[in-house]
Length: 305
Image 1 (tube, rainbow, N blue to C red):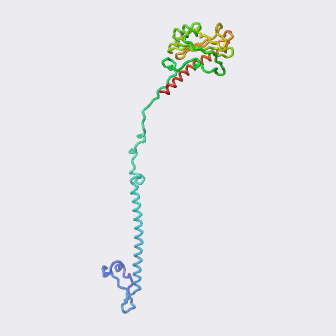
Image 2: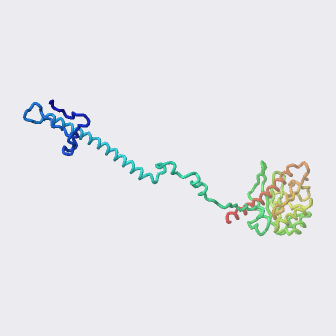
């Protein structure tokens, strides 16, 4: 009978080297490889060594495979731990179905502060401060109202002459003007004269307690209501007997008048354009100075609250 080789006999007669021999079925237990050449039943040591090497190789393969599986398992555990540690606070780690819907997201306008509408107080009217003696408290004098030594209007320069301040208004007026001033209770009449060449202009500013009194004086004045010309200090007498040109106006509690003519006693005619222009320039300057007086007091009142 020929000797059996390891693993011979087909699937039903294979022997599992990992199962103890005592637990294997009798039919599957392998026959010991004996050397057919030995009559004294000596084991085939070469066959046994080959079987032992096969078992050792299989064990190493199992160890390597098991180590790879363990490495994959550890990496998976670390990944799970990272996701678990970060997933609760990061919306991007979770599925999109867990994000709040548009209706659940608060509107940005809900946190915007709201303010009650406010309105700034209206600016103070400068005219109010020169319309009544109760509010018009700033110092007043001819030099304050008409400062400096000359006046420039456009391209024309006028030289400032004498000034006067009268508490008796009628004494500084002529014609029908004294009555007009007294009737409307003028309290003060300030005058100043400006010259340019042989043309001279006296400006008279009459002071009243109220705007109504000044407006009434302007209305009552006529062509014969003339402020008295002011000469002296190098300015020759003018408009004392010659024909001169006069103007009348008012602003606030002030009425202002001008009389313009030639210092040589010559009459003013319709062709005396320089005299007309000088009278208009000084009337305009008087108006600006009275208005500036109101603006200065309104600004000071606004700053003090």
